[in-house]
Image (cartoon, rainbow, N blue to C red; front, side, top):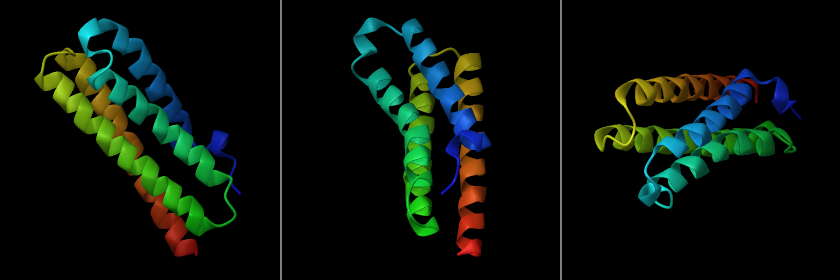
Length: 119
C-alpha cells in the first residue's frame, strides 16, 4: 500500500483539478454541461484513480489504476486543446493547464515503469 497523499503526482493532480474547477467559471454557461463537465470529470478522475489504486492489495492493481489515471490525463489534455481551439480558454490559460497535465502524465508514466520493474 502506498500513501497517495505523499505522491507528488497526486498532489499536482489535485492542484490541477482545482485549477480546472476555478477556470470553468470563465467559460460561457452554455458549455457548462458539455465540454466543461467532461473536463471536470477527467480532472477529478486523475487523483481519484491514483488514490484508489494506492489502496489496492498489489502493485499490479495499483499499476492498473495508474493506467486509468493516465488515460484520464490524456482525455483532459485533449479537452484542453479543444477548448483552446474553440477559443473557450485563452492561449495563456490553456497552455498553462496543458503543461500541468503533461508534467503529471510524465510523472505517472515514470512511476508506472518503476512499479513494473519492481514486480
